[in-house]
Length: 476
Image 1 (cartoon, rainbow, N blue to C red):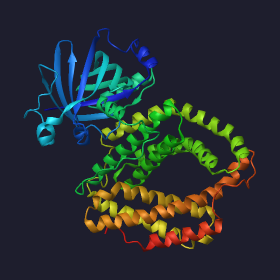
Image 2 (cartoon, rainbow, N blue to C red):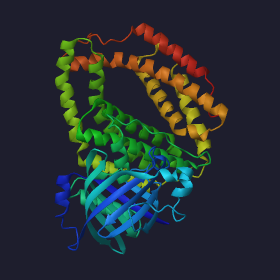
Image 3 (spheres, rainbow, N blue to C red):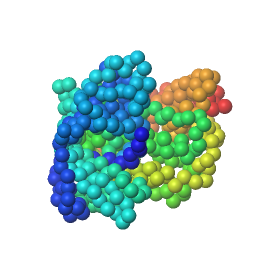
Image 4 (cartoon, rainbow, N blue to C red):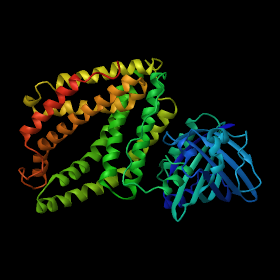
């Protein structure tokens, strides 16, 4: 069994053409045609367990490869790998790979799932004493009657520290736009077998209750970055309000993770990334606010007037997402996480201990800040809403650290109470922010929004807040 460390980068076909002419590449290159068939059971048991199985034909050679542990990070893939030559097109599933043991009786159901055809151009780059393989793959992924184009770079470390890969990535980005890849070729094939979504919701974060705080943070932050990149990829192809909403949620979740794990992180890193992520959230927020407002407005004429501003905001989102500032932020984040995020301070503290302290602190802010809900100024109520949102994300991130039956039941009740409070606070926030937004775009501040009476919303929010204050903490 080996272990590969590679950095994936997504790029367009136009950029791929430009890359092949980049003078930073050595003159010597290898070009080959590769045909790969990926295998799984009909119900995807291998994918479910985070593994892939393929047979790749390169000329007359056939190589069988099993890979594991590559599905949760963004950009950098560090995966266990079992590789061996085979004679035919049927997988050899003996004790040289973990597949047979993993699948048990279902091993007999393994069959072709999808295939990948690429033209691969390969260069070897020397960076001082370090060496890396740069591969440009361009081709097609096919699953049944569906297919999708593939264009990506793989930088694989041959000798030296992983930081070398990011140095090369930045040099490439100086010539052609690239951004961290999040999908392996097997991911692409499996996604073709399913309906293409309009947006990707956050995937559950799996933590071990015995984890240290630094390790838990890395798992959470990588999941947030993956959540963002999945939706950003959709937005780069075509704007969709649902993808934008989820991209913005991913940024907020990552900012919450940084705040929750503040005792673990270096202050300089925290300030740098919080500042850039705040900018990114704000840039996405303008379009999101207009999308929400358009859904709320009942009058068709008013909605049509708003549409011009809304479409202009959508265009600006595309321009910013294509900017070097966003690409550099993503590369910086992936490198920072891949190299351990400079974790110090309380990184070795048990994650569950840190979680208890941080969740307790957030809950106290929500409970204390929301007292006398019906008499609070809009700004103070908005602050309660923001803290409730952070508390919600924290409860989602850290649930696995409290696995006992009673803790799980209390967690469900806690989340239900939080959701209810967030819903009412969100409606109240829309009522408060809509009039100036409407006026800014030339619409009457009193334009009907299809929301319930403010007095009723305040009463419901107060009731939901009282319920949350009474719900038992799940982390005790």
